Length: 73
Image 1: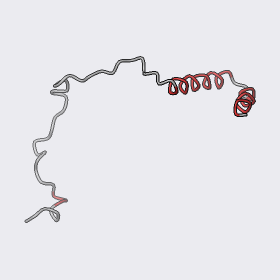
Image 2 (image 1 turned 120 degrees about the vertical axis):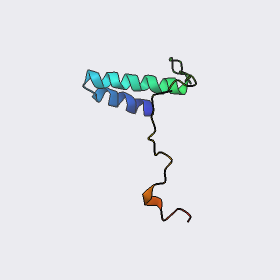
Image 3 (image 1 turned 45 degrees about the vertical axis):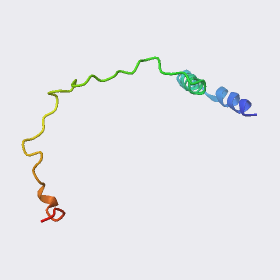
Image 4 (image 1 turned 180 degrees about the horizontal axis):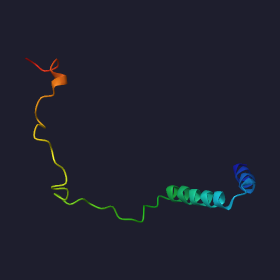
């Protein structure tokens, strides 16, 4: 039943681009169904690889004036 609905809706698509997009989506669903993993390998970050890329301001640990009412006396 559902296959007939899919076929009839497929034939209503006029644009080749939309048909290609549908084919990509079907490939995605099939890969999801059969549990295929991504082909790319996941990069593991190296300890210290971001050293020197971030700077904190000198007053980073200074109390914030807006929170005076929340701070204990």
